[in-house]
Image 1: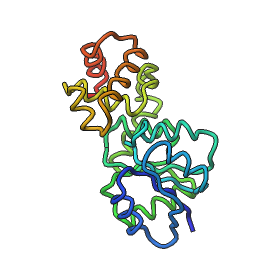
Image 2: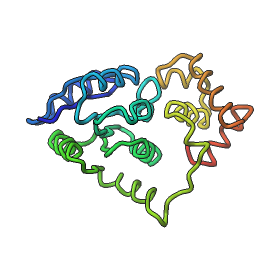
Image 3: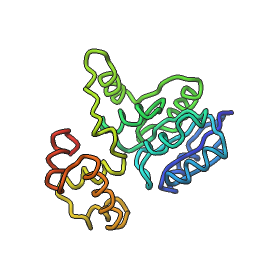
Length: 209
């Protein structure tokens, strides 16, 4: 029996996943944001964590960062996103695999078992991103500026670069306008930029848009 903690901010999705998982998988905990995920994973001690990339509180990368070195659990990202930066980001953070939410129940059950045994598991298209990013010849230069920005800050930054107003960003990400302002201020400080127009140019230069 492989024990699993399921981390996703949509309860209906968590319910659906539990119903689809096959024999041999036991869900021992659930969480809906970064704080609850960290607490449940520490308490339940699962073998595998099914981790959504986009979560309230900083995203899957923040969960990985806060639990680094303090858990034996293996992390399998399960997300609607198939963006290269999301895949590479969580793998750099320590995830053992990344599959999209189009995966079937039997495929997900198999992926959980393989990750529990130490394998790396990726949806076919996503494996190419990882190989390209980490190959000796094609690896992109490490961007220390980009690496210091949290997943949630990247989400805010991406929407700013697309021309969204603060109120629109707040609505899109289910956060307050004040929280959006806090994220923007944090990014400006980290990148030593002065306004949202400079942020937009910075994001466009790194193809975050």
